[in-house]
Image (cartoon, rainbow, N blue to C red):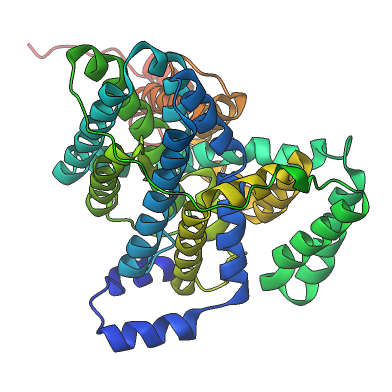
Length: 434
């Protein structure tokens, strides 16, 4: 049993309030807090633009759009903080990016109250799927190499993006890499923090910040009474739940498992589903387990001791809540950051997790082909039927695994078909007894 597994079995939130409070202060570290900050920065940079595009497609007002952002960030913050504290694992949640992408093409076909009703039903559907434990039982039957291949494929674009940024922002990339390597030799815990500082300083010198887009004001939620219609349930609720479960929750559990944890799938999926339903009248479409951003807070860069990485989840929750309450100002700040800077920060923060995932992908020789198929399919970024590459990588990897292991099972262990054929031809013919 790994250290992380021991921590997850032993730390279930049953400590007393005073002991739990002291434990958090004792376990807190700068590296974990910075991992939480980077997690929220990455989550609120690209994915937030998809939410804004969906809001524009649904012709939402500025107040409704701001409320959507508030609900998405507050829901992610509450679930991050509460679940990380309760399980003593770095449970990172986020608002559903593929779900928002689905809404870009469908939200304009329904009234906003009908969409809110569909959000509510979608959350309940996910909560039931988690409560019954069916989803978790399926995930536990997946070979570890396939899970690692899916994680490596999900993170591949971030690793490649670090070096793709050399074209447009060579100074921040080189400064971040040089600082990361130099600091990691002496103090690995602060390598990412040093790289972050170096990249920001290099970007300012470049220059690249556009502060004119920052708007300082508070964000207030707007309540919308849900309405229920069959067409909205079929057109929004079903695809939203399916893509969120397949493209977010499945790899989200995979990230925790790949880092050595044993997540309670019933607790995590049920909690995020109920939170989604509760925030639906305020505009939240779906809260789910994060995959890409979770890897930032679950790896060794957050803390060498897996039992202390849950602080990164607490920090992520705090920064999510801050983003929601000060939504307009902080969203503007994130939008002002150059895309190259975000790519550099995310790429450096995920280097360790990417290398570990690749090693686990090819570790098992018997299942290597299936794991590589999973990695390549996920890394391709293909989207079919509104479902992202992570799900299709998982599906094709399992099909490959079933096809290859099924053929092996038809042979006895260690059986060589050539040797068997030769032995049969050399054996004397069988003569029945008279």
